Amino acid sequence: MSKLTEAEFESVDGILKKLPPDDYEKVRRVLYGNETSELELPEKAESLAKSFDFELASCKFNCEKEELRAPRIVRVGLFQNKIPVAPTEPLIKQRDAFHKMAEEAIQTAAAAGVNIFCFQEAWNMPFAFCTKEKLPWTEFAEPAENGPTTLFLGQMAKIHNMVIVSSILERDEIHGDTVWNTAVVIDNHGDYLGKHRKNHIPRIGDFNESSYYFEGNTGHPVFETEFGRIAVNICFGRHHFLNWMMFGINGAEIVFNPSATIGGISEPMWGIEARCYAIANNYYTCAINRIGTEVFPNEFCSGDKKPAHKEFGHFYGSSYVSAPNGSRSQGLSRTKTGLLIAELDLNLCRQARDKWCFQMTQRLDMYAESLQRAVKLDYVPQIIRK
Image (cartoon, rainbow, N blue to C red; front, side):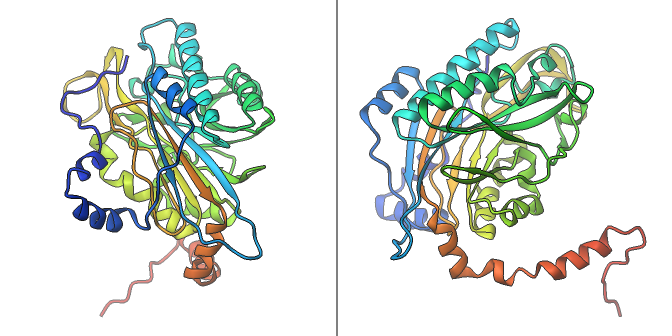
């Protein structure tokens, strides 16, 4: 199972709250933007979270009321989790444990009125791509449209009237049994709505994912749901600004970023990136990261001149939501499985666009022309020298 390194602290927010109240409010305003508030969650949701032993947090973003448009209120649920059983257990036992955990999380989210629920990256398996071993890990791959996880979540979505975003390892049985890193979107009637394959694959440290799957070929789809237009920017795609931009150009109002990233590589960037692109594109972003330290049966090397090891590193969670105006929620724990529930008014997307005029001033035609030249082999950079 995932284990906790003794040196790991609980959360940045927990440390900030040790400041005197007046100082905390000043720091919070600068770091987190416009004030948010906690939701009054039903007692049933609180009770379920306690019984299932995971953190439950909430956030409500403020939006000015309009005269001609009614509020478009949506509740999203972001679930970060440790693996529930050890990677050495039989695969069927692992899958059953993941599905049981998912059912508990979705039940809790439903009790809190969540409309759209999103898991972390590859939520239903150990993040074993560091090992470079194919078996047994590729056995977790399944068809996006009708695999066991999609069918299971389809039942949950229908029961709870909830859209579910499920990041899995996909097996494309039609095209040579190819494996992909894929986000499946299931609508609130339990039907498969569509999928998006990860556009950008990391080649850094132990993130040797290109040994398993290649860059995706599904473009930048936006899914029209009864609760708003959503998109999924999977993990490493958050480092690529054009990736975020295209989801916005295609009309996304909420972009989910299911991730699996460790402290030694990305933590200083984590709280910045999704928030930056919420601002730049005037939509909501939901960043979900894995939790825990996963230990594998066999040692593997990282190509960094250090000894072989069995641990990937600590997945630091800290899932959060950012709004189109730059405000953001507090983050979930760095060490605990947890569910963050955020209430959004999608009218804020247009309000932010009207205020900042980013879309009006972005000059897509100019950059499209420049990029067309830049991709050519005979491109000459525009550098002026004496």
